[in-house]
Length: 202
Ligand SMILES: C[S@@+](CC[C@H](N)C(=O)[O-])C[C@H]1O[C@@H](n2cnc3c(N)ncnc32)[C@H](O)[C@@H]1O
Image (cartoon, rainbow, N blue to C red; front, side, top):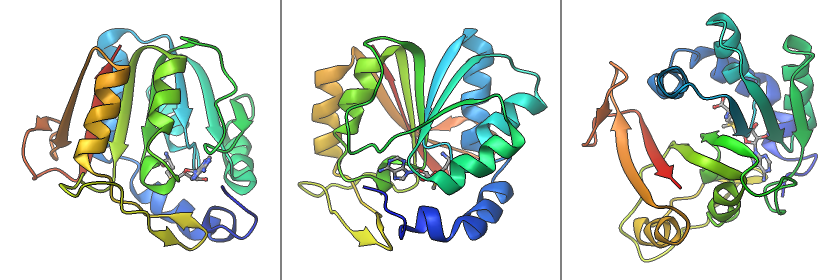
């Protein structure tokens, strides 16, 4: 649960600088090339941050039906300053998503799931997605037996157990794949990427 004292509301300026510096991160390029290749028409972004995904779309003139969700008023405010027409909803991922089943063609979350209380939010993401769910993880999944829930400055910084995530993915998706992304924006099936991607298909 995000509160006023959470880092997402108190350290917004520092995070904004960090997000800006990652504007051309390979994981950001992955979602953009996926949108282009598949002709994606609608997307739900979980955890908008400072709106870098919207910046990336605008820079490339990609027009898409966009909905964003975040619980931080500060981040939403910063994003709306740059993108005043963006449809962004204030909502906490500890609660059920306020959307219908299959409402979005693609659901996307980058560097968000390690910060929420439970990976079970994946179940909700699967429910509101029609086709794909793409999750970019900052931390690799572990071989531990279950989640290592670690509180960190009013948020979480979790390691997730691969066994738990596998079980959820088998329950919710037709197929799924994990990989790292290398500097050439290529899926690399080894530990040489900077971000880990979990790409699930319904
Ligand atoms: C590390 S930032 C990533 C932002 C963006 N996805 C990016 O890649 O630039 C994490 C984002 O998740 C949001 N967030 C964290 N926990 C949340 C929660 N429980 N409910 C809703 N949003 C949350 C934060 O406010 C922040 O915008």
